Length: 303
Image (cartoon, rainbow, N blue to C red; front, side):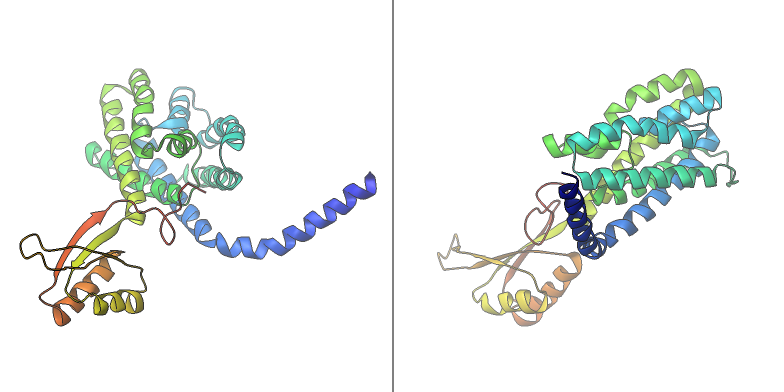
């Protein structure tokens, strides 16, 4: 039994060593996004929330209230509060997501410890601070959540709800955090609680906006008599796929093949220029596709 276990460990170690460079290359973009997003979020908390005694959302918000009331260490409270949620998440969510969340939470703790004694610019325009702080935290959070990771706290629950029920993360976070903001009234006062609500709402909108901006494409329909040049340009120059739909003119009854494709904003401009120069009699319709799921685009489920 001992020899068998030793052999299995050696094979597992060898497999890990072989897969490590592949995983590192595949996850390098995630690493960059998590580091940048976490740093932006932490800066928003430490520069635009804590100095003004604004309440915040989720586990971080609860930790802040304890910090305001009892003077306990904010970084340590944030780290400790995430332990139970991470244990639960290990059973409900993917190992990849949980491991990246552990990294993000650890990074938040370190950055908070580093920033806690830093001095930031102060202003009497608290509403402006609440709006800017919410936007900064939401943008940082959106960058992290887009990768399939999270920054711990209620983000873990939000990712679970999105995975199981398709709920939007920002809106779910907003509703679940109303109770935390309400409780903060007795600690930070009505005015700061209201400003905290503004900040949290702004953050939730920015999270959804940031995440959808990565998945948004332009749905393009091109009605033309000769679809071949359009298809050739899309597939060879833009390197995108396209679908031809059989259509007929409602008045003339003539055949009007319609080319459908999903492009980025830049690619849409290039296609528009090509059609204007080569097929000005064609008809082009462009609309926003908020989310595109499938091969070549967003995966069906969060990783």
